[in-house]
Image (tube, rainbow, N blue to C red):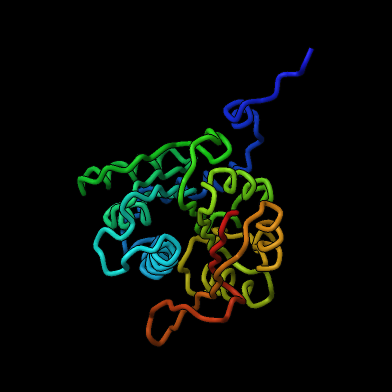
Amino acid sequence: MTMQQDSPANFSAASASTVDPAEIAKFSKLSETWWDPNGKMAPLHKINPLRLTYIRDAACRKFERNLKSLNCLSGLRILDIGCGAGLLCEPFTRLGAQLIGVDPSPSNIAAARLHADKGHLSIDYRCTTVEEMDVRERFDIVLAMEVVEHVSDVGMFLNRCAAMLKPGGLMVISTLNRNWKSFALAIVGAEYVLRWLPRGTHQWDKFVTPDELARHLEDNKLAITEQAGVVYSPFADKWSISSDMDVNYMVVAEGA
């Protein structure tokens, strides 16, 4: 008699969750303000065009698409994990991609669906987690933007993200480095002095260094192909790409 192995679907259902309930409650309180560019999510609105451009350009290089085309991502399936109210899902949908946005907060997903309906956009929003998804559902691109610093187990989370990628697919991650500079700027400066974000939005000890992230990706057979820092200029009041990865940074990794 042979033992029955778990199917991908069973594995998905049995997988432990990396969701931190306290983090979900924290961001659920902001659901009604996600789309207000002058509200509590204003910093995200300011950085969003930069994130969009960085991901779009990496995708066009990888999949050999015409960057100038209005539908340059046509035919690509993108999974946006921790999508919030859809700030990235909507512009990528307009570029022709098929978006699946997942978030464990019911109020975030409700806000995302409402805004997409107003814009007559067809986006597959799901109130779920990457651990609960069927691993047989694969994607050309998996996004985890400002997510890894909020999960309870980074290694487990990235393992499930990697499992959702098609062979040769791209994973794009943005997060915060862990050092004295990130504590001073991202915690003290952004939350307490400038009050860009509600106090307690981030926990410094959950920030992830580039070396730690690289090891987790390597463990899941993902190779980093691009990485960049993201810095804010108070004089220009804008975010830009930089070689400085001391605080905010983004990484593009490719599957085998």
